[in-house]
Length: 104
Image: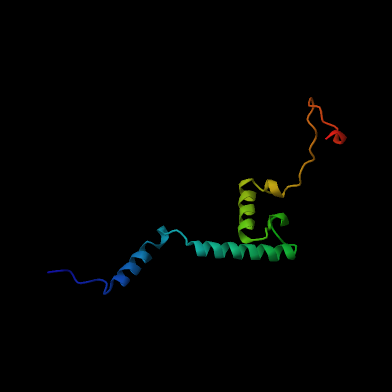
């Protein structure tokens, strides 16, 4: 004699499976994008109010840029990404003769 069906439809069976394995599922891309936009907005407000916990330079024009800057900032132990740091003045290297600008 066959066992009684636990789920009436396949949709119920699939929903139960997804619920049991929810912790093993990766977050959806749309959810992550919404979180990035939310973080960008929160940082925008904090920068405008001068209460940002991170350097203002980390705020990008778009959420993805802000997120890249924040990731680099955290990985680098609290230093700004290279493209946001002020450029050091370049000194001519010694031993190589520099051409005169009027001869070029």
